Structure formats: structure tokens, C-alpha cells
Length: 307
Image 1 (cartoon, rainbow, N blue to C red):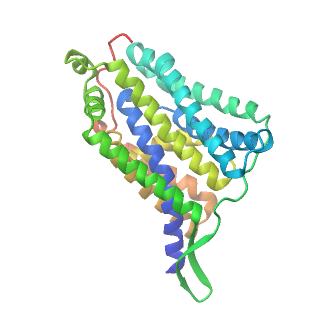
Image 2 (image 1 turned 30 degrees about the vertical axis):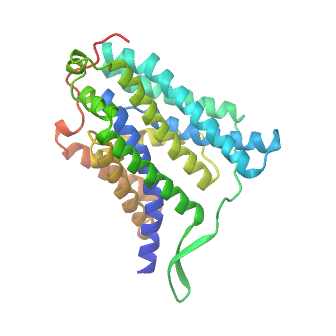
Image 3 (image 1 turned 180 degrees about the vertical axis):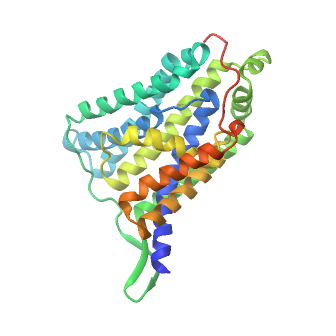
């Protein structure tokens, strides 16, 4: 029973990262209603920038480790916001108005470009962070087995949950949240009632990118390294895991992604791990196929207002 509890705890931590990714993806999907493969690349490059910034702060600026990590984190958020803004303004907004079906191909190209930028920035080398807050916290024990999470995992989960609660509350009751829902439902009608559609579009893309960046930063601090190909893998994976909770509600998308992570962790604990991704992707494909078409966020009208 404790082994089962340990796998659930492992899934809770993974679920916190997946939930942030899914929340940001659903926020962006409300504007695009098309697959955004670049979302995973923003996640990956944010983690890589965190590590590179921390290494630069430690080796070049002679910072202490906490200051170097803070420097890397701040740099990652700035880069993620800048990348998301450029992506919204120069790629997604023009395509959403004129050729929305090409968004998938365009974001795949952006994902490949960001992957290569991450590789070039690190000179094709792997930089690793030292173990951080690795003290195990025991949740339950029996005989010689203990169910634990590290202190960093608990901090990561707390940050993710607090961020999602605040973001969900703001999206439900804020002026931006109401405008986001209006633009998501019908951008043409939203523009007719005075909503600045391009502004809401850009803000949603940036906020979604920052959610992915936070997930990448927390992942980098926990794992110590994020590989070059991680962005493409998560760009596809987040598309599927968001489908569990639905593309229309970022909050439900986050909860569905967290549940998926727990199931994924249980598979890794009880079944051959080399088949884990195959089994999970097959299950997610089945969910996408069986889910009604109107729940997949298929857009019937697109941005017509000039930015």
C-alpha cells in the first residue's frame, strides 16, 4: 500500500507541472482553436535558460547559488514573455486572421527553431544544476519503506497550486477573463461590442507562455537538466493531456492533466516503463477520438480585426 502511495506522490509532483502546461495551453487554445506545438518548446527553453542563467551567474558573475538561481529564473521569465509576445504578434495573429489551418505547421517550425536556439546557446553541452532542497520529507512509513517527497518537490507543488488557484480566480472574475471568454467564443462579435481583440489575443498568448515558463523553471530546478528534444516531445504531449479536461476551460484542463500524471506514474510503478509513453499516448488518442467535436475547441470564426 505504501508503494502505491509513493507512486501517487510522484504523480502529484508531475501533475503540478502538467497542470501548469495544460492551463497555459488551454488559455492560448481559446484564441487559436488550433494545435500550438510551440507551447512545449517555450516550456523547454525556459528550463534551459534557467540553467544557463544560473551557470552564468555562478561562474561569471560570482553570485551565490540562491542568487544565481534567482537570476536564471528571472531571465527565463523575461525570455519567455518576449518569445510569446513575438510569437503572438508576428506569427499567430496574422495566421489566425488569414490562414488559421497553417498555425500547426508554423508552430512546429517555431518549436524546431527554439530547440536549435537552446542547443546553440548551450554549445551542445549539458549543464546540470546541483541537487536543491533534496531533503526527503516522510509522509508515511512502515518497516523499511518510506513514502517521501523532497522538500523541493513540495515547494514546486505549492507554487504550482497557488499559481493555478490565483490564475483560475482571476480568469473567472476579472475583466480580462470576461473578455477572454468573449473572444474565445466569437471574436467578431467581441470586436463589435468594443473589445480590443488583438490586445486580448496577445495577452492570452503571453500569459499562456508564462505558465509554460513556470513549469519549465520548476522542472529544471527539480531534474537539474532539460534536454534539447524535450520541447518537441512536450509540444505534442501537452496537446493530448489538455484534451482530458477539455480545451475550453483552462482550470478543467489543469485538473485533467494532473489526473493524467498520476495515472502515468502508476503505470511506471506497476508496468514496464518502456511501454509507458506508448500506453499513455494510445489512451489520449482514444480520448481525442471519442470526445465530441464541439468540445475540442473547433473554431467557426477567426480574428478579422486588424492589429
